Length: 493
Image (cartoon, rainbow, N blue to C red; front, side, top):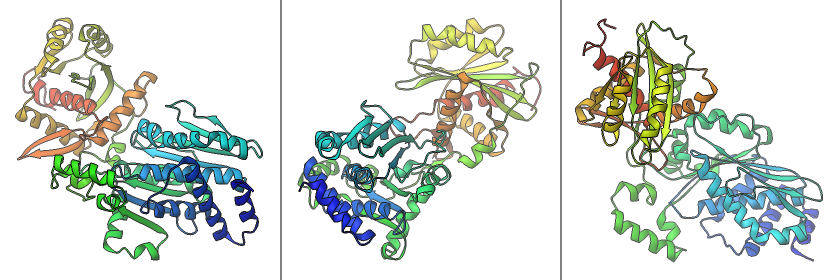
């Protein structure tokens, strides 16, 4: 009798759902041996809960929140258990199984968790094909968003889909039995509750939130789940939700290599540093103040009919290393400011980009006044554009500094706070990507103070940018602080 036949026999003798759960855990043990991967003691509870909650369709519980030290193995645990559950469903239960993988940045979840599942499958691919008649039908490519296994006996499929949990991502309409949210601390609470969680409703879907502490957290829902457990660990026994916290010391007890690695990081970063406390000690250290929430930003989205006789202004935030150059056009309508459009240019080949900028600005004539940030590479853009735009648009240099930046950011802050600035609800096809980036960067934007000076900037996390908000702030500053006070426009708002 081979391993698959042994599981089939055990299921044939099963008297209740708990026997089915034990059979699935036996299947996990078989796959671990085949894959040559052994779950550590602190990884087993998370894997067990995933199996128990999914196989009972949420009856025993439907939500798991895990706070683990960085690089301690949470992704490996989730990937292995997802493969176990998916193959168990199509091979033994003869049911389809869908899993949604979510993260703030889609490429991160695609390249990490989905590929961990794929890599583990590759190690048992020939065995599953030969003994279980299961084949891979999608997801061979490294960047593919969907990974699918199919049973040749009953045509049932295991489908794992990678989706972005970014605020601007449109992901409504999917249905899953298992929802895995990675980097949960960085996922917006409203997005989580209104878009992601409902995807599990039709199938009693279980949601697994994994993450770590971060000074840039955005997910109050996730943090509250962890904090409730910190105050009363007995909640795990009295509610359907389940929380597990694994700090670096817990993981180091059974993994000497991990212990050595973290101790080196501790010596390098300092035990009292924010980086070490949050990434390994799992302490909530400080909170970043978000500039604007989704509820406020949603109110500022509205369609608008532009008129040529109204005053138009523009600003250019010039690319630095890893950023984009962003041009923003705004129009003044009474006391309201409306964004008309954006232009984003990647790279720093400004000689080629200048004609594109001129063509974009020409489309929005007549333009009254604009600013360009001359820090870094901004000076050559200013020198080249100033002559090309005159006389139909006046361009001035913006000199960044603590004082001028404070005035600029406070000007934008006032307009947003008083709901006097709006972005378009309906945009042309070539503006959809720009609008999505604008929304995402506005929601990411953080408010920081140095004394009484305000600074707005993106979180210091790889892949986060603030080009669109800074360009908008500069355009508002051009209108509110420079144009009227400098005599460019002779009427008052």
